[in-house]
Every structure is written in structure tokens, then in C-alpha cells.
Length: 87
Length: 374
Image 1 (tube, rainbow over the protein chains, first blue to last red):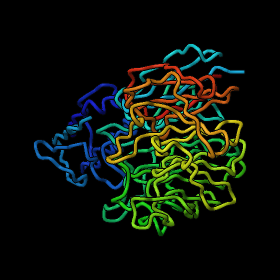
Image 2 (cartoon, rainbow over the protein chains, first blue to last red):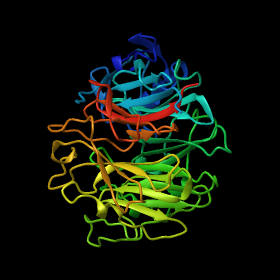
Image 3 (cartoon, each protein chain N blue to C red):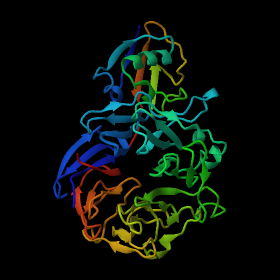
């Protein structure tokens, strides 16, 4: 099981919940699992070319990744943040 | 005769609906909806007024389409928003935001079109729930010539408008910011530029086959062979089957010029239209020329223009009106409505002779669309 931190920008999808459990062997797998439960969430974080959107950031534990193929292991933590984005 | 109408208002920070009484004198407000979301276009379906679509994005999140089938009471997100096909190697385009939302032809209920940034065209056949890439444009052999990655407006290169011939669902025009006007007669399978005599004074060849920045195009409702265009360089009109645009903005006062974002044809008179000039001199301030806001109306197809500023600030009015933020209704006299970059909503009940403010203190207004209030 992977614990995922949901940023405020996405809590409309999770009914206000900011921490959810998910499964998946990669970051994309975890996002796919979230998208099944919270339809539409993944596309707002990752574009159609599997690139993390410019103003979103993701960390596996304390390590930032922009690679959705990065492996995830049971017990990992995936932190999703809205980056600083002015205006 | 007038009817109650609703104004669908999309802003940089959310959406609002203003609903009028039958005299269009008093207005009820719904909103904000989706506060903080960038709503580029908010449109009702003339084939089914209870259906509405919004093009939404935020500073952080990717773009989506929001749908209502109960007149704006409740909203759901599209299951599959507009997205380009996935490319090998991860170098493909991705939709930054949907810009223009167009209901399909009257003969095709449930069909919708969306134009995006970067420039792309997408079609839905299920009322906006799922979207397909229109590969006739998005994979066109000249797509990199028409939409070079380095070209575009400050907010990103766009398909700035979609127009469908009311007599023929297969005949469509696009306004684009880097290929000018494109035309299809097979509903998007093939396209060709339609830009003869339209200036592009920012290119080495100022009258190229394509490369113009068509800010906005609209067909005259009573004569769909007449196309009005507000271009980056001026105001134009084309009467089909002609191919050569006429620079009707040459008749505008020289100290005002003919640069702007938008043009609104009269609902019944093919010779009448309104524009909203802006300052495109030097560094392009994009505000009302001289700080004196005004609409200009032609009643002779663009041979002459009259200033219509009664009600607007006589001085120190430093706003403009964007592409999708000026519209008319179907009343007689026709009502006119516009939203400003300063967050003000204005209307005229006498075809532009006088103007009054409906609302102020909104975020920057991106779109104002009128629809019958049923």
C-alpha cells in the first residue's frame, strides 16, 4: 500500500480528503489507481504525453520525480504538490 | 420585443451567470462557480438550452471541460477531455487549455467542437463528455508551418474561434493566431488558408498565404456568406464565394485605428456590426485608445463607422474587451453585452446608443455569451 498526499488543488476530487492509500508498481500506476476512484484526477496532474504538468510537483518520499515510470514499492509515500504558480 | 436572457460570464477566476427580467433592466446573479478556475469560454447549447459547457483550467492543474445538463445547476467533468494523441518518445503536444467551445450544427445534436492552445481542434459526439482529436487538422502535413511552436499570443498560441455554416454542417471556418483563417468543406478532414489581402505586418511578407493573426471571425446571421473578421492588424469583411478580404477598418478614425479583439454582427441586418477598438500602437497597451472606451458601429458594411460611447467613462477608462467577451442577443432592438478586462459587465438595450453597467469588481472577464432564459 502506498500513502498519497493530495494537495488542496485536488481535494475537490477526493471529497476534501488529503491523505489516501493507493496501489501501483509505478507513479503512473498509483495515479491510475487514484483516477479509477476519483475520475479525472490524473489528467489534471499528468498530460497526454505522460509529462507531469508544469506547475505540479511529485515526490517519492523526499526525492522529487517527474518520471511517471519511476517504481513505487509497498510502504512508499507519494507526495503531490501544487508548485508555486503566481497570478 | 425583448425576452429574459442569461449572460454566461467566464473569467480568469471563475464563472458567473446573470439572469435578466423580460425588460433586461434587473439582473439576478449566480456565482461564483468554480472560484479560482480559469474559465476561457462558457457556452449554452442553442439546440438544448439546459446544456452548458465550460472550458476550465487552473494555474496548477491541467485543462478540463465542465458540463451541465440542468441549466447550470449542477456540473460534472468530461470523462475524456480534449487531448492530443500520445506520441512516441514523449515529444508530442499536450493541451494547455481549451479556448473556444462551439456547439455543433443544428442538424447534429450532441456534437460539440473545441479549439485549444496549443492550436488544435477536438470534437465530441456525446454532448461534451468524451473528445476526439480532429486529425485532419491536428496531424495536417503543414501543421508545423501553420502553428509553429514559437508563434503565438502572450497567453499561448490558440485556435481563437470556430464558425460553422448554418446551411452546411461540413463547411467550417477556424480563426487562428498563426495561420489566419482556415476553411474546411468536409467537416475537418482537409483545410486550406483563406487569407487573401489580410495583412500580417509582423512578417517579412506582409500579405502571406498564411501567418495572419485572426483574433475573431463571425458570420452575419442573416447572410452566412458574409464573414466579419477582427484581425491583429485591422478589421476585414469577406463576401463568399469571394476569396479576397476587404480592409473595412480603413474607414475608422485614424486616431482610434482598427485594431481590436472582437466583432459582433447584427442579428438581423447584414450590413451592421460592432467592434471594440483598442490601442495597438508602440508596445501594444491593449487598452481603450486614449483611455476613452467606446464601441464603434457600422451600418453600411464597413464603409463608415460611428462612435458609441454614451455611458462609458469619458476619460481614464483603461480597459479593453477580449475576443469572446462581446455579444448580442436576439431581441428587437438587439441587446449588446460586453465584459471588460477590468471585471465590469456592461449592456446596451438600444443597439449601442447608450450603455450601462450591470456588474463591477469581477475578475478579468474572458467571455460573455448570451442565451435565452427558458
